[in-house]
Image (cartoon, rainbow, N blue to C red; front, side):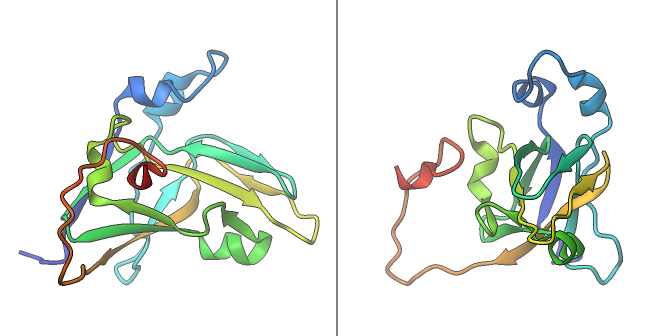
Length: 166
């Protein structure tokens, strides 16, 4: 068995995904076309996350993207999220929190561990970012993490962004 296999991507339930949209959008069609994150090549560290719908971002515009994805992973790992390198280089596309951190216990949150991305086109060259549905826009890398010797944390998460500091 390959000991590097420590996680599994899944789709959130349709109801969870649909709760992120207004009624004017054909959410079922978007949901049915979602793609699970994948590595592009055997040597790729990052799993590409794909745009669930077409996105056009003018300079300084921001959008919150429900990916429709959740991930279960070993307890001693974290999923770190970054913009795709080329998009950052060409457009200064950025995640608003600079690096997304998906903890292993986020999977069990009330929102099913639904992964969101908030991105901004921080172009200072007046470039508009155009992402087509199904195009990679973000990448996730799994990393092991350690804890301190005196760590005695027993708290359990039940929430999303910022819930572990409440």
